Length: 226
Image 1 (cartoon, rainbow, N blue to C red):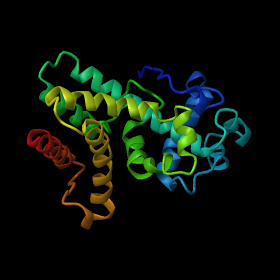
Image 2: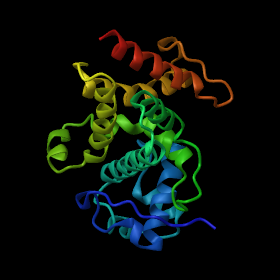
Image 3: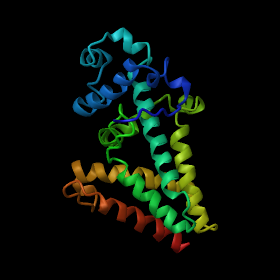
């Protein structure tokens, strides 16, 4: 049986933490499924309420609007990625091997983990790839950043940047490279699936090994060059 774990996120993202109640967990679970099915543009709280056999008002008791729900889902995802990286790299002393392990997690985090019974990481990963940039490419990004909405993403990037600095203390752009690697992983999956002329990556039968190799070549090429 799956075990329910709880990831603590910025309280400003929600009116009531959905992880605390059965209805809230259904909201998270089915919003992931519904956004994946119809896209964020077509997603509404009314459609979500119909899917979970509840009322639209009940959804609004947890989230002020669908944008904050999407930010919540992305923050949950990035916190989960950081947790997995911390666990996988604990005890690895070689900084190069630590970065390789982190890149492997970033690319392969989409594998379903039964330890969280209300989140399908595979489907959530598809949402991150397709919809993730919509959380911060907005007019309100500066205010939301001040309110700490993106702190989980920035913490993950900072963790990767530290690994880069451990490999080469003289590398001038550890944070830029860290954020680029995180974005690159998702963008090239999206390009390979929808805009193949924009990438050299080809994904066959869901095998993301070429993405992982791209990140390694790009990262170590820059780090070693310096």
